[in-house]
Length: 481
Image (tube, rainbow, N blue to C red; front, side, top):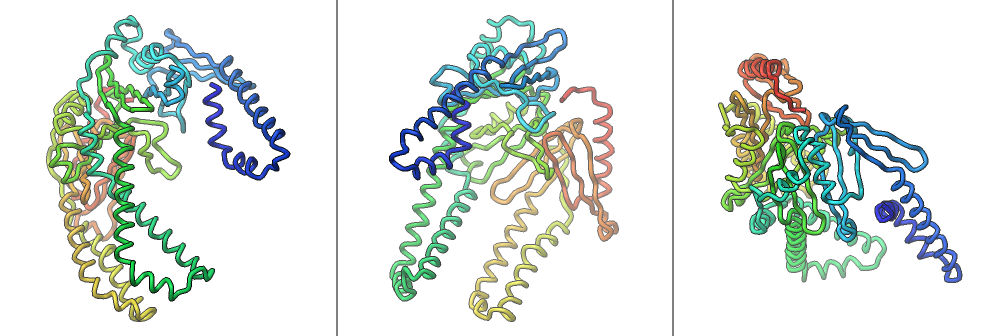
């Protein structure tokens, strides 16, 4: 508890502490050291009070998990077992050295983790998380639960699969870092010019001699560095990823230094999404995400936070089918294909071609004639954007059957989103006045873990499906919360 309080304090106050230690006079080092020791003593006392006042237990009769905590003021939290969405068991480096784990309980009723137990032994954590998430196992013997935890995993992601995924993903992030680096270099050159650190003639001579070679070396060096960092990060974070069956739930564990264990109930899964690009398809790997009704999902602006989604990187096509079969208890099929109206293409032509090209032409002819020297690049831009628009249209599809709804989209990384009709919370349809004659409209399916939309659909056709989905919602007796 002291180590946990200390790392939180250092994260929040490391900047003023560094400034204070840097600026303190040498004759005041002793007093500064006493201040630091005093802060450590206060943190130790606070950690002791947290430890003394923190208790938790299961009320079997009421079906509640009770947690009492506090330092000076006491707090009691009662959580109904049926409201618990996800239980995570994590172990960072400090916890690994001490030999304890942290256990987080997440419900859909608050804006943060409902309960976080910072130090608990592994055996107690495994039994507690099973009883919290799966009410059917509350009366089982502890030895049975331990045998299930130690059972052989039915899916195990190899380091080779993680390596394949690491070398075929995160290109966008790498490009963004490179662009940020080049902008920083440009700003530094401007600062040199403004402060007359280097004369303009000196920079021009240097640029003429070394620009191409230096730029290429910097670009490839930065790209290689970012590539290696992303690859190492993927391997370290998801090392030894395993999926096991534990009673009626799935136990997902991974991590090299910081071990993370997540127990989820398949019936509470709201959305399953996976993505795969051409290279990953050739290498038979993909990245899969499982989303539940989490308290961390919804932000104030209504957008969804991806950080609480459970990631399963490096899965193969066969492993994806096994996971889907276990979650949905049936074989996943695509269903009937729905295509968007051709106005889907017109909108993107207008936004990505006509407006940018018109703005560049007007700016070049009426504001800065020097821009006209770059007009020769416009045909390449038009050709590239036309190709991307066409690929986006080809990959934008909706698939519907009795049991599943699948949305497909993307340019290089093709994203797939799967939901079950009876888990839809509400449906929004839109049809603008100028779309009525063409029978075109938009639909948004709202779930507890995010929204799934399909634009420029055949409005009559989509309304028929909406009526069927509403029937599935009202007639279903399945429990998914």
